[in-house]
Amino acid sequence: MTVATVDIGTSPDGTLVIRPHGTLADADAVELQGALEHAIRHTRPLRLVLDLADLDDLDPINLGSLAAACRLGDDHHVAVFLDHPHATIAERLTSAGVPVHRLRHIDGTAC
Image 1 (cartoon, rainbow, N blue to C red):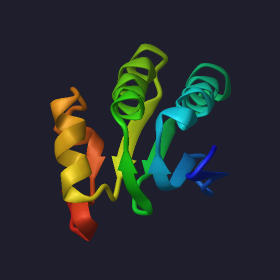
Image 2: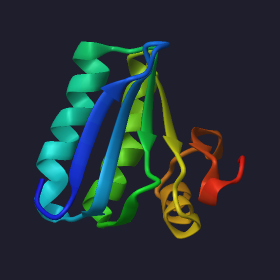
Image 3: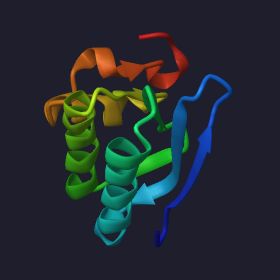
Image 4: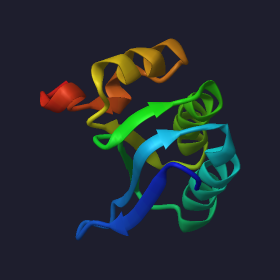
């Protein structure tokens, strides 16, 4: 990724956690889409958590990728959650079609 970096790890319960940091711009889209697709279609954890606490901003392409990951997860029986988004990012995600129940802990408070 260019300006943004992404950490990927697994929690003790088997949840795959992806943590982007910084700003996701159009130059990051292909790599993010590939990581999400690989995680959902090939790794197939029971849960995939996108921890957005350190995400400063994202462009419309990456916004759409996160929304599409929720739908792809449903198709492959992987529960996808977006944790700790800033309120403005959470609003944009819901506008892009992310169901509200997928967003957890908006701005550090339980959703």
